[in-house]
Image (cartoon, rainbow, N blue to C red; front, side, top):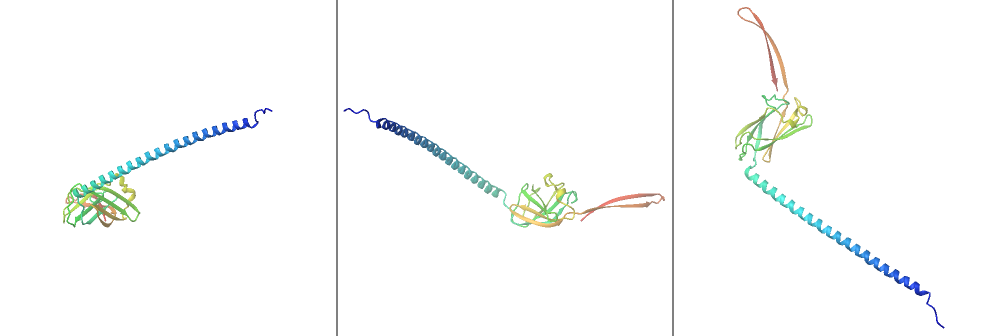
Length: 217
């Protein structure tokens, strides 16, 4: 007796087709993941190369800065010792027509050339304010020599009118070539007084003379 096709044959065929499709999908998925992994690895390598390039650039910049500092140190040697002999500080121009007047003495063995950059600091301990700025030396300074630094007005950025007040206790600091000297002073307090006199001359005529005096301390 002949038997017809088995009922299991279609199921086996479907199962084989599903296995083939699953294998193809798995192969495609793995290939896609491998492509993404390869792309990420390439990106990581490129970023590492960029980091190395930046590190090399930073190292080159640091070496150039170090070289520049050595050249500056040779051209402009630091002062080994100096002090502030006297200082006058005012909120306007009461220091003999100047906003500030500082007299420095080079007490070391190193000379500083003209136009050398000097840092000035004025620490108002009364009002808890600070003024700081750079200026250049008006003249060269040699061992045992002294010179005066004055200015008719404060730098516009100092805002001295709101930071200094007559009678305030101020510590003046001067930084030259890595060496700093300080001196405590008081912001000048100025008063004006008017005197009127009646003067009689030999012709018995009289006239009035008025004189205004300004005193600061």
